Amino acid sequence: DEQGEVVAMLPGSRRSEVQYLARRFFDAALLMQTRRTGLRFVVPAVPALREAITAHARDAGLHDVLIVEGRSHEVLAACDATLIASGTATLETALFGTPEVVVYRTGRLNYAIARRVVRLERIGLPNIVAGAEVAPELIQGGLTAERLADRLAAWLDDAAARERARAALGAVRERLGGPGASARAA
Image 1 (cartoon, rainbow, N blue to C red):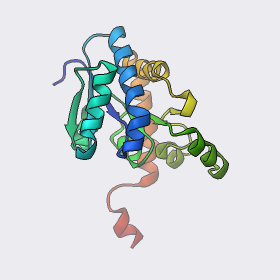
Image 2 (cartoon, one colour):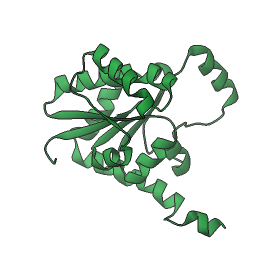
Image 3 (cartoon, rainbow, N blue to C red):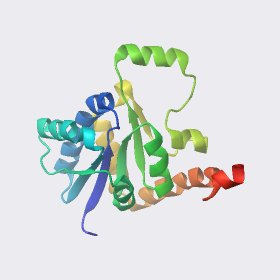
Image 4 (cartoon, helix red, strand yellow):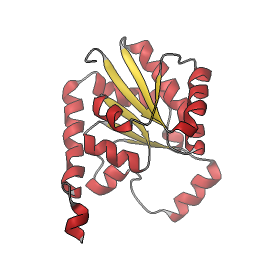
């Protein structure tokens, strides 16, 4: 319904991503709920991870999160902002124009190896496509519940800031072009 604000949380489609991200998302949700009333959280989950996500929400003490199987496009179209694991879903979110915080966290060894191999300034696909930061990124040690909550609050407290974020994501749609890219490429 049109009442209240909705935040989508997409902690990833792999068990390891959910392990590293879900609890931080839910801790941020609890923090946000102390700051404002009427805020709702929705997690579109792949069926294989629903139980793990539910357990993380329960362990965090977040009992009113709505976990739905699939339906990510419906959720992204209906929400006001998104917390999302770095990956292809960030690009889909950008195409919906939904303000998003792109996050990633992994084990220390994996991160150390990746930092030596990967030479990108940004990891979020919307940022890479746009050639600029159109979605804030919180990576590894920079990913905290407080920072997540602060990024969300900036959009939820200020409709103009939320619209600026939506407009910035428009650069992604422009760069990718409209429907029919496969036919044009062929």
